[in-house]
Length: 425
Picture (cartoon, rainbow, N blue to C red):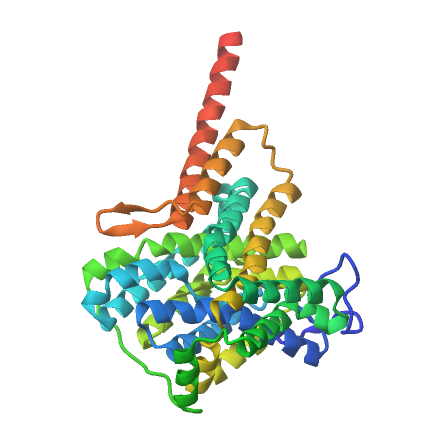
């Protein structure tokens, strides 16, 4: 697992090639790319505990530990960072009246349920992934996960358009024109450039700068234990639908980008995220998921080395013990986040389209066409409906819709064709 081979000379990536999960670049380059993954996940990972009231450094610690677990359980074959899942925001916010312990109980329940799904997938074999999620389905799920986040990126961009434009322009120029390693770190360089520009032009929030000044350099994360209330568990369990879709979509996306099937470790990926989420809930952190932002980084750099994710995980764990660093991250303004996520979220959507094109999905087939169309609109429009006291958003409805509708409509189409042949004979 730790015996990465050097890709070429470790300095350059030949056009048309990628750095595979079992490979790495030179260690300075690997560390730089690992740091870029840290930057990519920070905004979203720390946003979730901020909204739900969870301790930021605790969530950061368990995201790092969860990433280590994930890499071990998938045997280093699936590059991924496990950050805070946005899917937990709605149920945890709705359960705030029940207290932090009950919220954590919901996180634990979701983690255990996801772990159970992973075990089922492992026992059933990789074929269940092909049956349940063929390319037309996985492409739609990956695309809608990325495009569902588009309004978030646009909202952040609109909050500080000048800062966002500087950030976006920096990312594009460095990625396209930057030599060697600099070109591979376009997102990190762009975020730093945007932050510097915001600092010079007075774009940083005064209260965040004051919080940074007052924060201690070192300190232990705040640990909490869970309590279990059925009402909160019922609110949280539907999140598992999203976590399954995100994990399998991540595995499919990495497979498409690297050109190697990873279906046989899809169950392990679900088990890894299930264990990570369970552990986070037991200690006071938010639930985790494979991170869309990091798919974007991999697509931009063509580096899928799991060595970079070990660097990212170690960095997150170390930084979790520095309240000062957490406060520094929170000084990054909305405009910088908007400029960066405009690229990252778009890359995720395009990856879904790539899954379709690589698999030559036939969109003249009315089943493929209609289910993908409905799923995408549900995801992009963030279709949000409430069932009882449970509110589900566009990723859940789009994913569940296509998972249910595709096999049902495929069976109906087969029945219709069979009936038509019977009448002809």
